[in-house]
Length: 364
Ligand code: SF4
Image (tube, rainbow, N blue to C red; front, side):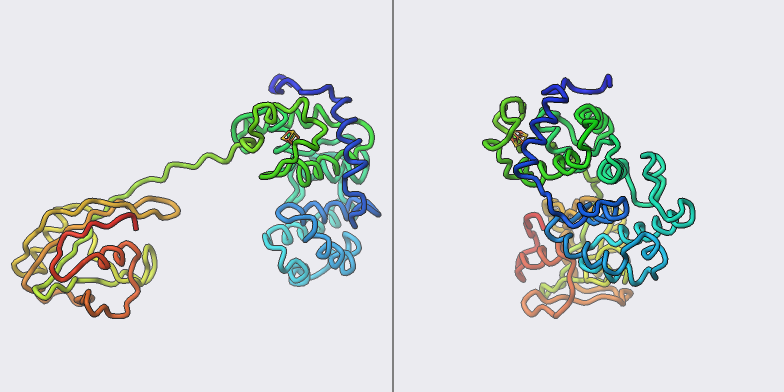
């Protein structure tokens, strides 16, 4: 408990306010609430992991008609399970659900091992929060949950900074979640925590004026509830460099070469690229007749998902190629052929005229 921030309310007061809210505004007629078996709660929890309640209801009902028991799910062909999941997305969830049902059938007599969190999380696709939700809702035993909705509510109540996925922050959130969890009305409390985040302390429109915690919520007191929870920090992308040769002939045409079929810009047409100026000089010496380098153009960046490419265009004019290049075309900017072009190359070419050799592209 040393990691726990100071609670904003005594646990009993928190529970009492939350359950009073839930009795009036919570969701009491969800299909997995009656009967509330471990199997039904489990399936609903897995479906709800990336999907809203309103979407899940119809999928859940169809699933239960076809697979009313854990055994029927375990014995079904995977194709049929995936078929009933079609449209929900994140199919690893369905595959894990199916696998976990088979393990439960083989190792736990066809029942989910709800006697402990550890036994449940040993099954494929069940994390600590899902295990807590299954135990609390189907057995009424005390178990805490910490899904995205609960994280949002707790970070706001305590103005807890840092991304909740960070181990240190998550530890604090688990400590708070455990602290506030009651010993009675576990199914209602668990549903209440989920409903509260989903319908009142919403991500972009928290309804603070209707909130039973408005007098103790630190994020509300700061006047900026949406500041919490903090987003995942973006990693700085590594930068790579390339020099792009803009070789033009006396007619102003630009030499392009096709990229290899796979990899970066696979199969597209691009300017010849070099890591260093000496590599570029070697290329010119071998391939171009009477090359004349112009002033290097300003560099610009092209961003890929996993790195930034710093591109330095190097304009050069020449009389012609020396004849050793085979896989390329002279690209006429006035009558452009229909070629697939790499995005920054397209931007560079679009700024050329037959008389300009120094393009100044923006960010492509
Ligand atoms: S006061 Fe607003 S931010 Fe705080 S818990 Fe309530 S709804 Fe969420």
